Length: 204
Image 1: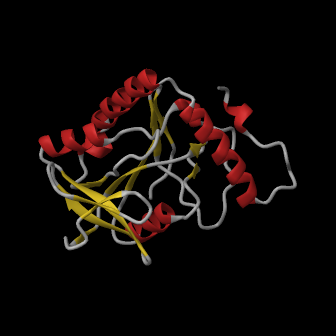
Image 2 (image 1 turned 60 degrees about the vertical axis):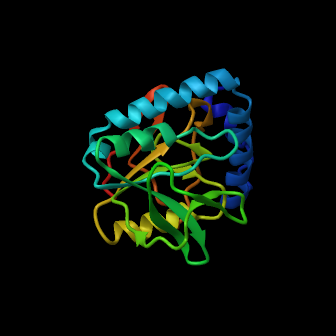
Image 3 (image 1 turned 120 degrees about the vertical axis):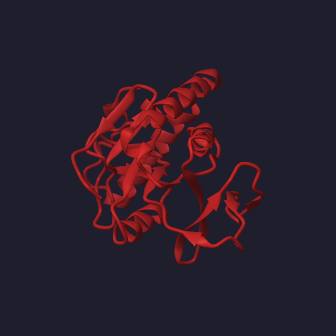
């Protein structure tokens, strides 16, 4: 699906309403992908993630457990562990996302949102790289998430502690022509799709 076909024509819509329209269209495009093609694209994305030099230098990488038709970053997370890097998964709390270290075989907890999250008894950690889920993205690094702003908050917090690498992952069908940026939005440094890497000239 061409990026411009996902863009709302309603200039009167507010930024939030416009984002909601784009989110619905991009998620519909993602859901419409053939399951076999989606699986192959996920594998290609994982392979590209592991080849990113920025990610190779990270000490602790924040990943996530996929839901619905999202790109599956678990093979990449397992490969990061295999090459000696640490991996963390997020937990949704009232204060925002809290990351806790994850190892293969660790028990996960199902949250009230239906997300698979790390054991809340584990100590919090602060990743220096994030693999970020998204509903939609554009060519300047703006993303649309799921509407709660958790990752924008996490990026703002972590980048205040140390240099932070932010890599969005999604299918090429989720690209839109332009995401209407709001003041709280935190753009990405790059996006990886099955078509390759899209880089943006910024430091977080």
